[in-house]
Amino acid sequence: MGRAPLRPASTGLAIGPQAPQELLHRALARAIPKLAGQPVSAALCLFSPSLARIAPEAIRQVMRQLACLRLLVATVPGVITEEGYAIGENACAVLLLAPPFGLSPVTAQVQDQTILSMARLEQCHGAWLQRAPRMGFLSGRGTRFWQNAQPIPGPCEALVEGAVRLQAAYSPGMRPLNTPLAVSLQEGNLLLRLERYSALPLLAQSLPFSIREEARLPLERLLVGELRPGQPSAAPPQWIHIRATDLNRSGLWLERSLAADARAFFALRDPQVAERDTRMALSTARASQPAPDFAWVFSSVGRDAAFFSGSDRDHALWQEFFPGVPCIGAYDLAEIAPIEEENRILRYSKIFYLFSAQTEYG
Image (cartoon, rainbow, N blue to C red; front, side, top):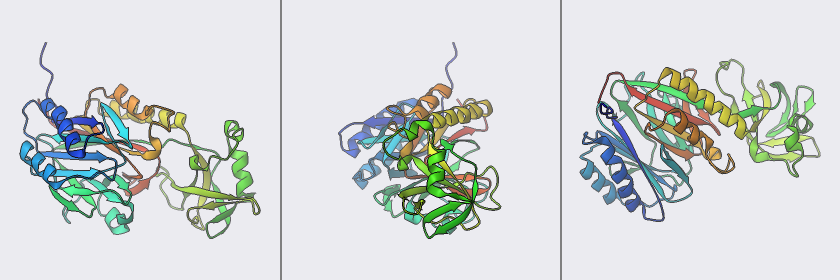
């Protein structure tokens, strides 16, 4: 039998009570042999949890060990590789790239290239977000970033070098509960009416029977989807949290007010719908790109194993559709994706970016 072609990417995952430096050493020990002597052109290291303390000298040692001059490091709530995942516990995930792939700095002249972006929520201002097509995640204030061995305030970003073919698979995981209706009455963040319907009774009537039987309203799983005029039909809605109910006025307190000319509907974060969406998205991606070289995965912390009652079904489906394909990813607060020619901030979704070189290597 012929020898399987080498992939120009490899990953390593280490989970345990050890310090970040020891976890990094263990993750590299798993990733380096998979490259079978190929030179390392760039590396991405993700540490969990987001408050991990990482010594700059440990990063410099890795650069010397790999003979690699391009290294990106971030701390996140959770990490993912094709081998497994961890959230809320000490872990390190590593992606090593070999030619033709690499990572390069972002310049003002970037055009028609997708940027890997990692930033805190407060750094996501309009000018930065719309500068070029972006894929990545937004994190909380505790996140730390390094470029090479230098800590940076963020955002942390890089271009993917090489002749790259990129395919995205997007899984929203939302179950709409009613048709979009015009916003007819609100007072600040208090939503009172959608067309002729009072907001709270409309939500109650739209709930699935199984939820009506629950002792409390699961506001953590319910959202309002906002659709604005002129929005492309394929673009996802803006998802808005419901903070509380107002029984006296039959209204709903939202995290922000809706646009006056918007249409809105209620939606439920549903594990079965999420699994269906992921299966459909990965099936479509596999038909278009059956053997990618590696992948990046960005997941909401709300799409972890607890959401699926014990096991991350999105991860299991990745292993089913793309067995053995290296992937690295993060669980975090929000996802960035270029959809319908606009960078959009998504919530409670899972996004898989599949990378392939345009020519044969191995």
